[in-house]
Image (cartoon, rainbow, N blue to C red; front, side, top):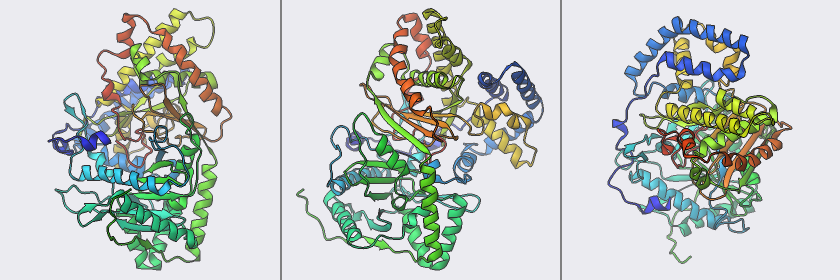
Length: 614
């Protein structure tokens, strides 16, 4: 961010939005062909033939009609998927967002200049907030450089959702409100919300047209913390945001009915730039082990996090920071923070207690480890002509296969930001080629030559899939669109989507491995796995020898720790296999652009279960 603050550019952040190409609708024939390939690892011969017949019937029958309807929709909308995806992946979901949909992770500066130290919470918090608010101002002024691949601009729309954005619960569907505006568009909120010991405060970060300085922010935070320490804890209304969505919607309606001022206070939180969370926890963290702080960020005190906000900055008592998403300067005389005191009754307090109970019960079912792999980093994999991300993906496949003795259906995020409001597509990393390679690695019968050959095939297949998905030729979102067209037309659910192989191969959000590369910088994050007894791997890959691979397991599988310990020793073994120039093109993929795959970013480890994504 420091480089972005210093860099000036004549380009405006959002200036290319109108010129980006529309999201294409893939060929029905090609999508169904790719789908059939993706289910092969999970079917015997008889099952595959049955699914093949179902797909053929779909292609020649209702699928063709649904495809025409989808093409008509694409003529009217520059991104035919956008509204559907927002609803299906986020707003229609009824499970609690804070734990199951949001993503979180520790801040990136712990290991090099802000190690844990008691007594630094507020000072560091004021500095961190000041830098983040400068980033907000870059967006307001449209001075954030446009992300590009070569000279081709990428979609920047999701940056609008970082600040002043909030979900609002609904009985059957939530809504998403975005208050952010650029300077040329008009007024934008300029206050933040601060949560401490079950209480909520707000204050404006702009004073007389200028952003507050770190000492001025420190003054506000100090006032809040001292007030909360000498007075009783608040009711913890924020915990309601961790509830099942319909229950939270009903509790919110009741809260508003008690006193109209409660709605005013809710709207102040919703429209705030971000929520700053003063957490009394003191998680242990080292450069090699981020497990405890990552767990606290994702599953910590729900009374000091607003689970619906796009940005919760969490400050622990030992000066350690995390995010949960969905000395000599003069201090001016600025207004003190305003406390938002909700009117509550016994029912609201019972709702809060129930929300906290269910939250901690579900959080106890999650195991989370964040270790640093220190043997090597991206430099060595690239030197060996191995794409770093494909390298990790195949290692994950082998680790799962060795642990469970079977292939694991796997979701990996691809970005579609070449297109207007493009977000994500699914790469199904568990391919026939990957399974063949895993099988060759299982015993002494396969020669080193055969293992290497199988690995090269798996690399080439994965690289091609990533390229196809990033350029609008994936099939998972296409199939989703076809199923939603059928629903809108009040047609019966096509057999393709009720076939057992559809869900067994990961369809409908049933991937046992949920994975994403979150970049090549220090940014970290983790999301709860998609399914019970599943795994979530959200990793960043550094140039040096500190690759972070956070691993989350939901459901307390006994194999959780061994899955991780199986993975890490495999990496240095794998890297020895690629030596010849003839192997390089196949491993890397001559037509594949590494930057296209995963541009270094503040993105979410782009999974469809995050509150906001790129």
